[in-house]
Image (cartoon, rainbow, N blue to C red; front, top):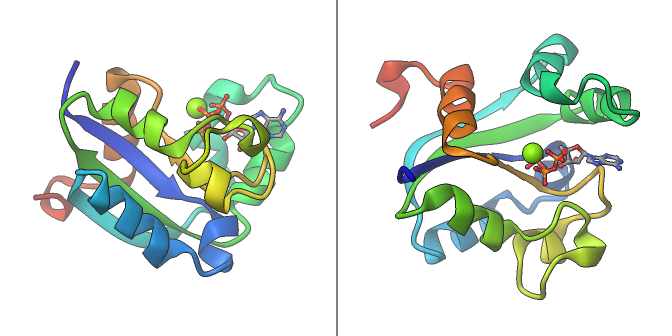
Length: 138
Ligand code: ATP
Ligand code: MG
């Protein structure tokens, strides 16, 4: 295990004005920000980020949604960060997410589910490098 993960606040949560509340929950859960930015993905970049899902039936919808508005990207630090962060955000489908999790509180649906969280240490490093250069992180 390493102590870093990567997250995005997705276009639904940003557009609904939940960015501040989500960042506050992340900090309150003991994560430290190593990098943070507001940006917008092109369809091409969103497709590249989620390329692992290219064969799935929801891929087109996912790419369209993730490039539909601004996102907030961050690298986070905490012991056992990947697992701890996925606990904080809850299940992919908010209908199955535990009470108090970020997706339970802020997600609209399985597709518009408020936040991304890396699923492994390896992907956390790849995803952090996708968004941030060396001088954009502390
Ligand atoms: P993420 O990678 O965004 O943190 P996750 O790891 O919980 O989410 P994945 O299986 O990696 O879930 O799916 C990536 C994203 O694709 C989901 O967060 C969701 O936005 C979308 N997605 C997954 N399954 C579906 C589905 N059945 N219908 C529509 N969108 C879906
Ligand atoms: Mg995933």
